[in-house]
Image (cartoon, rainbow, N blue to C red; front, side):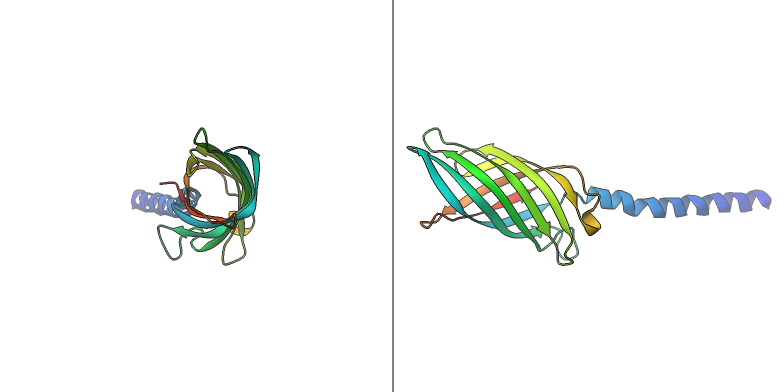
Length: 165
C-alpha cells in the first residue's frame, strides 16, 4: 500500500513537473515565427555611380503568422530602418538594418537583419536583440527571404519578406 502511494506520488510529481516545463519549451520554440511581412519601403535613393543606387529608409508593414489568430506576432506592426545597396550592372544587392515589432498589446521585439542577393530578391538572417513585455527574453536566429515586387516612380518600393520558411 505504501509502495503504491509512493508510486502515485512520484507519478503526480512527474506530471506536475512536465506540465510546468512544457509551456516553457513550447514558448521558447515560438521565437521562430513563420509567415509573411508585407512592406512599403519609403526613403531616399542616392545614385552612387551609373547603375549603382544606395537607398536609406524604412520598410514598414504588417506581419502575418502562418498559424493565424493568437499566434506569435500575428498582425503585429513592423518598422525596419535600413539600407539597400543595389548594383544593377552586376545584378547584386545587399541590405541590412533593424526592426521594431509591436503587437496589439504594445509589447515590442527588436531584431537586427542582413541579406544579400540580386536587385529584387535577397536571402539572409535576423537575430532577436531584445524586447519588452512578453518578448523581454526573446532570443535566437531566424532566416528570411526579402522580395521587392514594385519600384514605384516616386522612389518608394513595395514587397514582402518570408520568415522562417
